[in-house]
Length: 90
Image (cartoon, rainbow, N blue to C red; front, side, top):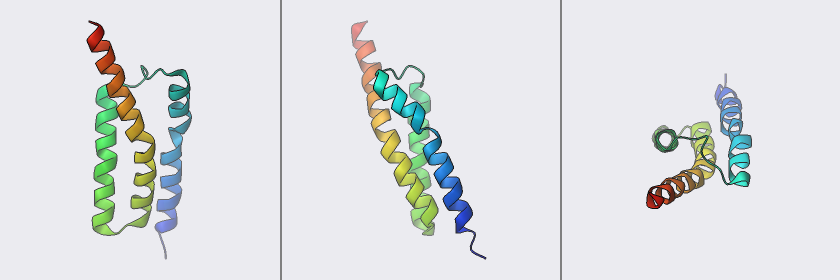
């Protein structure tokens, strides 16, 4: 039996679950609902899952972690930029 379908369904759900929050944060130019620590740790975790998927040649893991990184790398950049901007004001 091909269990990859479970991976594709799980990947779709977890990858796109955060999309509404990300869109809202970008539209409002307010990332205060995300901590810098969370964003960095989460994005690093996604990157490591991608490496793991590549090493195992597990396509659901590869595909959905690439998609997730496409969402979270810009958020990470914007969050770091926001923190630096606040730090410079002090």
